Amino acid sequence: MRQVRELGILLALVLLIAVTTAVNPGFLAAQSVRDLLLGATLLTILAVGQSLVLITRNVDLSVGSVMGLSAFAVGTLFVAFPGLPTPVAALAGVAVGTVCGVVNGVLVAAARVPALVVTLGTLYMFRGIDFWWASGRQINAADMPDGFLGLGRVTLLGVPLPAVVALLVVLAAGWYLRNYRSGRELYAVGSEPQAARLSGIPVDRRVFAPFVVNGALAGLAGVLYAARFGTLDATVGTGMELEVVAAAVVGGVAIFGGSGTVYGAALGALLLSTIDAALPMLRVDSFWQQAVVGLLILVSIGLDRLLAVRTARRLRGGGSRGA
Image 1 (cartoon, rainbow, N blue to C red):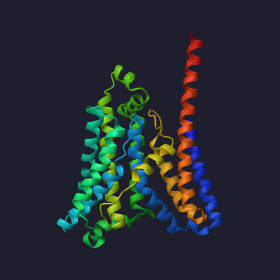
Image 2 (cartoon, rainbow, N blue to C red; image 1 turned 60 degrees about the vertical axis):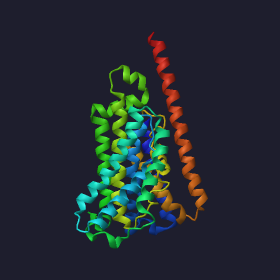
Image 3 (cartoon, rainbow, N blue to C red; image 1 turned 60 degrees about the horizontal axis):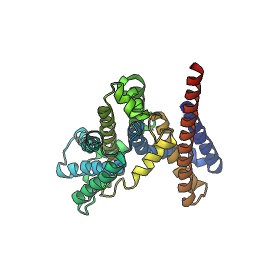
Image 4 (cartoon, rainbow, N blue to C red; image 1 turned 180 degrees about the vertical axis):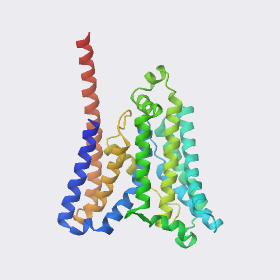
């Protein structure tokens, strides 16, 4: 059924592109496609990390703040150390995100505080640190080396490098979830934490790790944001967290945990990015753009509940026949 969900998202994406291209043939021009891929890059990376957290029946609302804090950290390093190598600055940005993920993970897994409460608090905490650090300053492209800024412009076989990075993140996460025992255990934890604990699965560790990975990916997104846009302040990533959750849920990752794939989340991110780019070309009012996304979220959650109820009924029916 999950494969059917992902196929449906893909078909909706193809249909949207076809309709938009029929109205505006320039929609599939090389530069437009490049801009679309770049636009979906950050959302895709963040949606992958969010999916890992959602699968364990948790949520991380702080990813936008973590991305903004990591981006500003990278820019600040270049201002303080103009000759700093690009890989060092990039690793520092990822490290900032990882530390934020560790904070979230410890509070949720070790302190057993609900993830919604923890990450809502750290959303404001990390954003507050960002505002304190920035103190009204803005970092511009002139403050960062051309080699770093080039990461947002360089292409591989015509595909923007940030989009290639996003694809590698999706493939790596998908491979891990499918082929590693610890990856499959994330689904068990999300399906029924108490049953997973009784079966010997280290539930706390399986809940902690996705938060750390999610923080690291948010840090990576911050690095790519800084390289692409070159203008950084304390507002970077504001409101991004809801769009990230929407991309994962629309992509078939159950908000109730235990099911979904990062491939679906990536398709959900691409679909939402395409909607943002296509509807203005179709002369659809901005209000209806947001309404369409909201409707997709409601339909996805409703479908998840329907699938869960049908599966439960089927299992009960099978048990009765077996008895």
